Image (tube, rainbow, N blue to C red; front, side, top):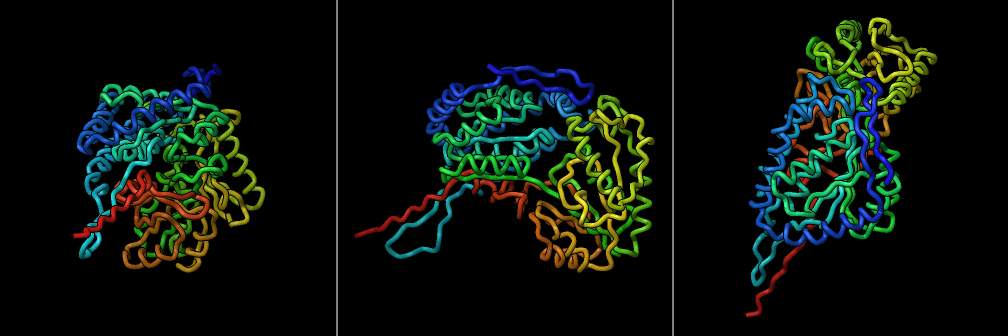
Length: 462
């Protein structure tokens, strides 16, 4: 067997080493899942909910240990990592709580001589492919509703965060889930493609890059099964002239640099009305300079290393290219002593004099850099927000709720925020447009993507 080796971005040491699974392991997992599926799907919903709630409880119980593992595997400050488990629990419990309503049969208007209804049936055996940046918050979106709906689940997690998969498996066993209902596989790219293209897989849910999403889609070219793809983002914010300036600055700095900017819905570009622009930029820079970049195990650190040196190098190059094209960097890298080329430690950066000919304003950065542009009115802001091949979230900062909703209808995005950003509400559909992907997780609509509709049309002949 080949090895998985996880290098910690904290200090470059080997943090985890384990065996990769092979094609034989995939076949065994699929056979076990298929064998378990019918009995699991046949359980009353209340029983499945109880099992899955036990899984969630088991993960919550180990929150402090898990938080330390998250930090070592992907570099988020230890003071912030427990928040992810809190969010995981809240999201999971919400989806479990709405399952009865979301999965209840739909009955159309009565029709004489007929009994008609639509049921939500589980797909069968599904696979969840999850990334490292929010390893629990991304995976929970599909795993919990898929299990609750009656599917058997095979989780393939990022090789940067393999202990997340191990924790899920331990929790499933602690909760007493039947053998085969939940399994994990550690796979390379080639074997991941073999898994999802296997006839035994009935649904795929992937979170990651556009390029990887295209690879997933190609692996399914000869299959017609549900495939959820949450891919890239270049999420914009618009600060209107009537915005609460201090509130917008505080929240947008956090939205830009939390998790070292490695957030699917993190803020990557900001458009500010000309009446507020100078004050907004000054406030943004001052607050950014208060951040502490360093070892994420230190209590004072609030921005840690990026996940890999190569990721930091990509963002650094994107920033340097923008400066070469006329952008102005407002943060002195020397202010952040830990920032160093050739390491994952990268200072946050704020750029002005940017435009949409620069990659930093159009291509996903997934790191601690943000460009800020001045706009003259709502129309210009909407045009620039829509000038993107992505569409996950967009935020509007204003005191006028009616105007926020009006502008939101014009913005090409999956979620519109007013006066907040970089957040998922489990009561709302998590979805995107354009190259951000397809499909829905969370909310009652999320259950529709882990089930298929089955119609019953019963006619009385007497």
